Length: 308
Length: 258
Image (cartoon, rainbow over all chains, first blue to last red; front, side, top):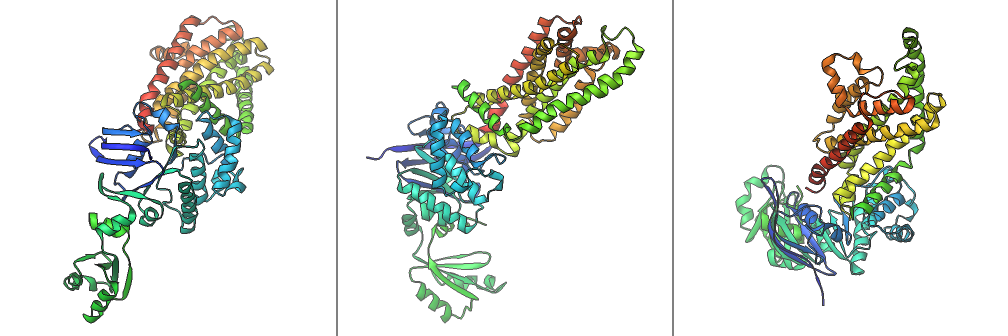
């Protein structure tokens, strides 16, 4: 029997006149890896901050771990692990001191923290950096320190705001591997991301957000199946050619998208579509056939790409 | 809940301070020595030659030292409440990391106050040791001057923090230090009696926390008769501390948990 850890109904966040989150409903179950996918400004971070009890809700209702974030903030925060968008580490002191300092905010005795820090730094593969100053670490290492820090209180739920934004591909994969392990251990993960590959890798279930609203919800696979054909053929043309071909491209399939630099043809059979392209002598510079991803789902739902 | 976690914030600040304590202690001794040699001994010999009966009946060095101790506590308080706070809330965001934990806004503010008061105490103690070594006051009298120094320094931490958390940009800090702190340092009766100032400016000097602290410190250090009863000054400075701290909470909450 799984427990519902988060229940949001008609959740709203306003900053003066600006509506950041515009009445969203969602639930998160225990042991789930739940994602918020959307472009910058979609309201993901505002939602995360309300869940983390560091931003009061403007409207609707929100229960997290059975608690009310507005009135039971400190109690709720004592059971959450948080990896904010900005690391907020103290760069001047060592990795060890950062974790010790943070653990003490939870009133955890030093002797317990000592052992826990050793374990956590081993888990994020930074045991050799225990006594290094944070300012000397790479971006990926700092992110892993922040993850270790977020786990210091053995949280019931781990929330990560854009865990891999700004990291190089290798650092991202190291991080995904660690988060995947946490998921295997049964830790409930809440993740925001604007990378579709991240959402596909990590999330059991996700909501797609745009302009403060939830525009779709489901597992990555279900969303792809529901909103987009199986395959995509991407055609790139020489500069200026694409505009002249709009009509002909639209004839290739029921669903096509013309972006600034390329055309996307959605199809259930990529080979047939490519054959059609050749038959009509469209003469693209490159042709790429691939499986549909969440990026395509997002494009379908909003008419825009996730990362510009 | 707020109180024990405020001590955790204090502990965290101590952990950060550990890295730079040596330099800080060194300058804590160096700057009073420089001031007392230059102003107290150097300039003082000229003053003493002109006023044989002394200021308040004592040498210029003796007159200056207790006031300077209070003024340096004031400056330490202003530093803790300005750059330090700006760093935590804006530049490095380390305070934002704290509020994601059970630490509440009031625990955050109180912890900052406790630690800053401890910093004021450190600066004041090294100053008091220097004064004692200069033979200006007895060890016991030096210990006594720590009381007005702490009151003034903590009052400055509180009001400066209340100012800093309302700033949208850091440029407000150099302006504050230049147009509020330095004039207060120079014109609150530390270097000369405020009766030397034009009449209309004297009430302003009276209103500053530094003036109250200086008067108290002089009466403790060499028995000068203060122009204000000591208990009035204690209440006045306590009000600054309490009101200043209270004024920190609301803007800090808005800033940390928007």
